[in-house]
Image (cartoon, rainbow, N blue to C red):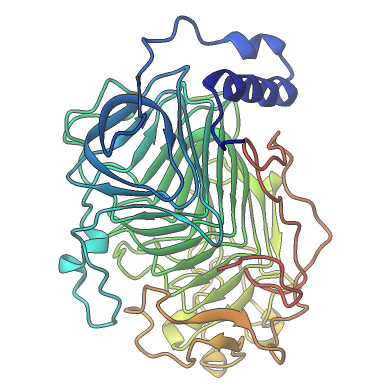
Length: 458
């Protein structure tokens, strides 16, 4: 049987997901008359305009204009698909987009005229990863389902050029590689790669999110997070590798207007060398909760980041509903180790953190207090399989390249995590086509790679 599915079957599956995850059954029918259906992709090689249908296994397509997927339509990428974007174009998704690459046959959405320059001497002002060559994938408030599995998204972040009418999208305004903004919809990104952005790599204004086991490199020119969750976003960000973010890896904020509170779980992420292209005082670093957001964060491995786990008090995070601990910190300079607990913020030192805070914070320490911990510089190497520490040019190394962030068997980060919590339940289902392949449970080892082989598979 051919691996091609009709729009009707996809629609049935989506409505089933929505119906089983919402307490109000009328949400199934919140959308009224859909626009006219798009043109079927068929055997086209050059694609643009309003389309629907299947991009077929192993084929290469040239994107020669903006692509629009109407509500009621689906754009399906089978495995081994390459989309070469030929200009400052973008995907604009009112309906459904599903990209199902596989480990052995991933998908690519890239800008072939750009070249990766992964070296520490590369000038950020001329690095193609930070310049934005195409306008990314923007999902409208009507998009009920957007899935990326084993998919490379590269060199996005250009200004929008003649986009369709869409919330939070405007002509000549900045784009994000990924924008999702349906509070009742589902955004699933698994085992994928996001290389380069000008601002946030992922921006969400609501949605049930599942972002697991991905790799983020060189995101944000002079600002931008790996994933920036805004009001109404609920879900899990786990087992990801973030390296060279301009600001943070995951960030949670309840900024915006909505009835659903941002609730983000960030656990078992590996975050390296982040925060250094963001010059604002107090901004940049590793993981950030602010402005009414709640959630939890555990088992994150934070290496040479400008700031440690940061809880903001102005405007304040929902600290009554925010829990965290079991964070592992490493730094190769006094500037880094003196911000394991960021000064001028309200991150509570946790007895489960490593190194133990009582070994270096002063006895009179108060939240946000300046402290000095020279004995921690280049101490407690987590012992990656291939990533040299100490690293004194850590501000410049923003890429994975040939590095390997698995933990050696002698790593002190093994067993420092906790498994005494559960991921946020937000209605994401386990389904090879319409849901997550796996909701990976908390791991006992710090970071994205577990010694039992689970976690990030890159």
